[in-house]
Amino acid sequence: MPSASLTSSSLASPLATPDAPACGVPSHVRDWVAGWAVSRGASDPRTQPWGWTLDVGQPTQVARHVVVEADAERVRDAAAQAQGQGWWLKVFLPGSCAEPEALVGQWLGDAWAFDSAAFLMSVELTPTEPGALPPGYQLRTWTQGGVVRVLVAAPDGSLAARGQAGLAGDVAVPDQILTTPAHQRRGLGSVVVRSLQQQALTAGASRAVLGATTEGRALYESLGWRAHTAFASAFRASGE
Image (cartoon, rainbow, N blue to C red; front, side, top):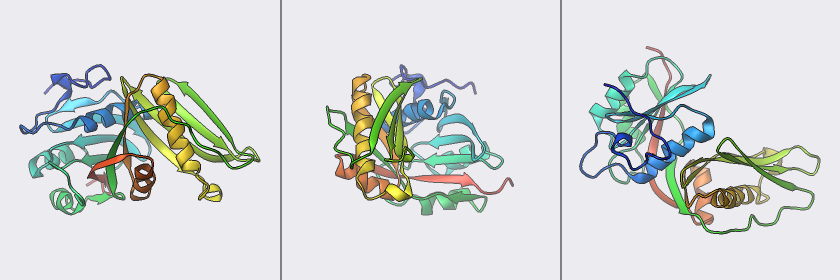
């Protein structure tokens, strides 16, 4: 079956929506897929009957399938098209789900393992100040190739915290946000997230969506983000 690309201009297009039950595909998932592809420099997402496929081209992630409205048939179909190590599956069950790994694991079998829990979250963007940094720290921001980037430099010039966000139409997808161990517990993560939100708003985005870890979820909720559902993040641990 020929596949179609999902771009920032086709988020609402029938070509961007895989075959799904009548309840449809949550728009937040489409937004996340489109913006994540920009952030990571991945291929345009290709529409599949069960979701999308993205080529990533990294040693630890060759490509990924995103499965929506997941059931046993849809997950197994996607897994059958993910042979070899380095393939990932992001699996969204119908409706809100707190712990999808147990059910998805039954469908996938022993060749697959699970990463840490992940949560799909969103926020409407409004003007915001980044907040104050500790003395001696510096905040730098720039946008290149549709990706907003934020760097917090430590007093000695080394990396203290960083983050980026892919821009896809009016959506921003924050990604790869981290604070180095020596600089944690100083509010740097909040400064990075707020800075990304403000820079994305300035660039024309009106909302933001991301996939958060359990630890990240607490930070984002403190900044006004809303968690919609957990999703399973599986990777092929065996090429067999």
